[in-house]
Length: 427
Image (cartoon, rainbow, N blue to C red; front, side):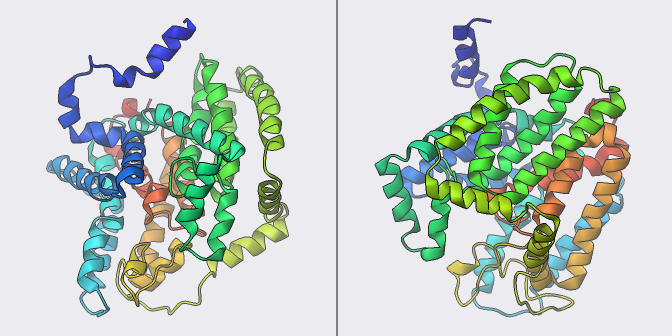
């Protein structure tokens, strides 16, 4: 394939020959989520309005969940636990009174409530929507990653001024965010998490495919470079873990065939590109980067860090909680309510109580067990479940839009449906 052919293929999404009826399909927008997020971000930068992600995409989730959930499907334990957790969230509003209750309930249904609906999309749709969402994200993710690396290393004055204005009202603590790559997005979490999803997906693609194009190695190195510059420990740890699982997958199901042949190009490219990128880093950014590495460099430090993240807040514990959504990322807009942004486990205890936390943890632990049991078919979904369980200790992985929570629920739904779907759907 010539260089011009590669360029034409890359920009094929702009072709006027596309079937226009696709632009009136909810599933088309769902499967092109990262395009939607990227375009929505560009619109928000220009107009200050983020409705494409905050309203349009949640509406798509509800529509697809309802439209594909009309058929009679025999319920299983995953469905039951999902329903219990959702009803517990609603139940907390019946006996809790708090300021701006109506507004917070509405916001709930356009945030974590909407993301949960992706479970039923994965549960009821025979097509592997998860694979479509990831593969359709390759091009916009590559574009925004390259832009991000350029802005991060070059630091043009206009971009630094833009960041300064963005953080001017966020307090001194927010200025540490200058050290993180964020590309065009308002938060480094956007690329940190989605890079982790795609890197994990590509590991299995590299180690399980008979033929692997050279482009995937360059793509993988660019995403890994982006991930490191985002400086989010949990997503980095998760794609590193997925590499180990992909190697295990290769050894178990392919008897280690073509292992060295597949890993060698990546090692060669990474050994050339990563040191070059690090050498171009700002001194303060590199210091911040090394501090992050040191915080997890030993088992004792890692254990202390995990304990610190799990007990991040001095919270009031209860059986039923204070109300779902009361401490979500949007709660600061309705004082005296406040958000708990960095620990999903503690936030669930505060909002939905111990019963809610037990139900949620049971759901994800069962998904992990089933995913491991059917690992040959559900390897990627299993990686996402592990990512969710791990990142919830330090982030709001099921709540905050910048961490793409619907992905986790979609993977959970596909794990749930595996027994009623043909295994060929996962091949």
